[in-house]
Image (cartoon, rainbow, N blue to C red; front, side, top):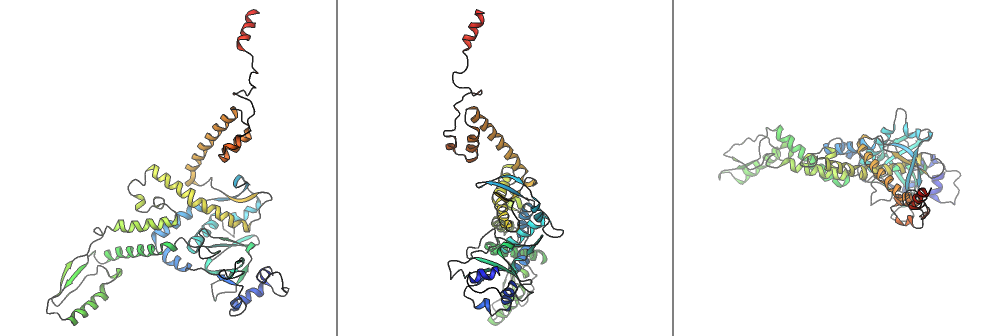
Length: 442
């Protein structure tokens, strides 16, 4: 009812049209939804299944980058945070967070986050629906985003629902989810769509193909006795027809990475010359390593964190460079992912009253322990600065506001008028000389 009302507007008789009718009308095809000018669906532009089968499951660098993102991202735990403006405050829990701790039977927060980042990375979108006291992960390529109007034809085009078809087009009976029943997470928005996300694999598809071709090239080199490429020459007595026929046979048997380095058998006065290069001459490690690094850059994971060849060379592994790479990964990639997934999952959990928002606790993540040490050092310096400001006579609350906002104006007009460590009014102390004089007189 609510979805149909959003599609049609406030007017009109909707008393006889239910969500079940909507799903049936959508699944019938060729009727209500295919002819209505006020409806459009946003479907995945790229194939989720293709990314899974030909990238995630067949490309070593892609799998390594995905695994590095998943392992650390999924270790966070959810908490509520009191927000003062845009800054999170004290973390606390409520029984409602149990839904995220046990999202489905035998499930855990770790598995929920792993599934969400896996779907978001491979499809650009992650969908999690709430069904009573449990959550359900929806396969992203089986979900269609239902809009109130075609984005190319109307200024106002809002999400009014999500249609989930088990098995995709032609699959099982569809189910409709309202926007407040489903968490939709898009870490990388697709610039060509209003609400759909984009996989980080999309810009590096050619790099992935090149890396797979290089791997196949290496495999063919060893499968065919590591033989270099050859040039074939013929005597003048060979006719053009004989040459063309020979070349057609030769190309059919030896062209392509899969046929590279096969043993070549010749007859009829043909001669061969080595003109190709072996893997060392091709500088194969450099060529393949550069492609791996570009894939890692697209994933937002430094090559040294993933363990790629270029990340393990030269000075990349020294303490300073590795720590810088780790901080870049944590403060850039992971922080952004955690903030985004919390905002998305707020749809399916009931927040406590007040200014509390869903947030993440990363204090128990081993990868970030050095960050915790840095935070402790910063807090120590802030405490020292706070003590100095209070000792100088500034109001404590004003000093805290200055340190939090890095804003000197917070101290304006906030001096107590007291000075020194004892914070006594000027001239309130006795003159030491007079004290000594009175003692002598006594």
